[in-house]
Structures are given as structure tokens and as C-alpha cells.
Amino acid sequence: MKAKLIDGKAIAATMRRSLRTGAAAFAKRAGRPPALAVMLAGEDPASQIYVRNKIAACAETGIKSLEYFLPKNVSERELADLIDALNEDGTVDGILVQLPLPKGLDSHRVLGRIKPEKDVDGFSAVNAGNLFLGNETLTACTASGCIELIRSTGVSIEGKHAVVVGRSNIVGKPVAMLLLGNNATVTVCHSKTRGLAKFTRQADILVCAVGKREFVTGDMIKPGAVVIDVGMNRVDGKLYGDVEFSSACEAAGFITPVPGGVGPMTITMLLYNCLQAARRNNI
Ligand code: GUN
Image: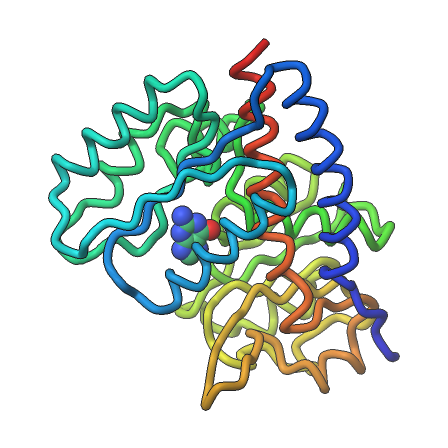
């Protein structure tokens, strides 16, 4: 079998066009554009690129970005004061603190300070808890991007066996909850799972978010499965997924490439969450 490619770039582009229209309509109604505050503490090069891409995507979509580049020795008090001020600012709809935070800062406490209605990453305990409870909430962007990509194949999620490889708070856990919310039977595996292949071979839908280059190979994939590869493993300047693409293509029915699969969806879902937050905060 030769897998069909799931073109994340094209799906993201279509979504972004409609988000641009939505942002313009919001701006007309509210008399101001939707607004996202983005905070980066320290100088982690990968984080700087992510933040720059997020700011550029906001500009393209008609979402105003407020940018806060803070030194790596910023105190938790200073971060908390800034978050408090943005929480109270009625013209700011979303607040994002880029992770990882510099050593010594407690990310759980910092993220928990963001008002849940403005937590566009969906990382706070309140929003993660709402996802767990099945309540409508702002949902972690990469996880909801995975669901959009699965939907794009036309394969229904309900009743399927979905296997998630990875259990991070950013992707693995939220994507497992979303799949469960869509009535899949969900198995969560991770780097310490024994006999991983025995689980992955049962997957009608396989989401790999373990952060290990080419961890899952074609012989571990059920013929015809939908394979979503969240991996972004950079080795000698080249990007590799968590799935060995060449062998996986022979088994899977649908597969996301790396790059060009999940990556473009993450920021798109962030823009989506910003617009949702703006609409809900300005009824
Ligand atoms: N670090 C890695 N991924 C993310 C993300 O989606 N959001 C934030 N805020 N930080 C990250």
C-alpha cells in the first residue's frame, strides 16, 4: 500500500483564510482586532523561532500581537505582575507564555496565573481539567491540530482504536483526551512501554508524539492506518519525525509528512483559539 499524504500546509492555509475573515468580522464588531500577548523569557533559539512565527502568523491573520521579550533572569514576581495586568486588560484576548521557561521558574505556577478564558495554549490546570471533563474549553493547539488532520482524511474517529505514543502534557495527554471525546477507544503508550509494536499494530489511528527520531517503523503499523507524526527531531540540520516515513508509507493508508504535516497546524490552532477567546470575551 502507498499511503496518501495528509497535507498539513494546505489544510492550515485553508483554515487561516477563514480565520482571517473571522478576525476582520470581529474587529468590525468590537472596534478593535483580536489581540494576543506573547511572552518569551530567555534566549532559547528554538523558542525565539517559534515566537517569531507566531507573531508573523498573527499579523497575517489580522490578530494584533503584543510582544514581551524578557531576560532569562526575570523573576517569577515580574512575570506574575505582567500576567495579572494582561488578565485585567479588556483589550487583550489571549496570553501565551512560551515554554520552556528558564531554570528556576515554576511553569505550572506561571501558566496557572493566566485567566483560563485567555489561556490560548490550553496548558493551565483549569483548561486541561476541562478537557479531561469533556467541557468546552481552549484546547492545546498541537493536539487539536492532530484531530483536524485526522478529520481531513474522511476517516471517522468514532469506534476506532486510536493509539497515542507519547504522554506529554503538551501533546500526548490532550490528544488522547480529544480522541476519547470523539468516541475512539484509546491506548496511550510511551517510551517505556514494553512491546510497543503489539499496541501500534492494533491502531486504526496512530499518533506519534514521543520525540524520538524514527521510533515507529512501517512493520509496526496496521495496513491502512491513519498515521499522525508529531515528531520534530532535528539531526545535523535535517528534520525527522517520530515515524520512519519511507517504510510507514508502505503500510499506512494516510500519513502526515515531516515537515509539512502537524507543524503548520499548531500555530493555526493557536490563531483559532485566539479568535474563540476574543469572541467569548466580548459578547
Ligand atoms: N513550547 C513548545 N511547544 C509549545 C506550545 O505549543 N506553546 C508554548 N507556549 N510553548 C511551547
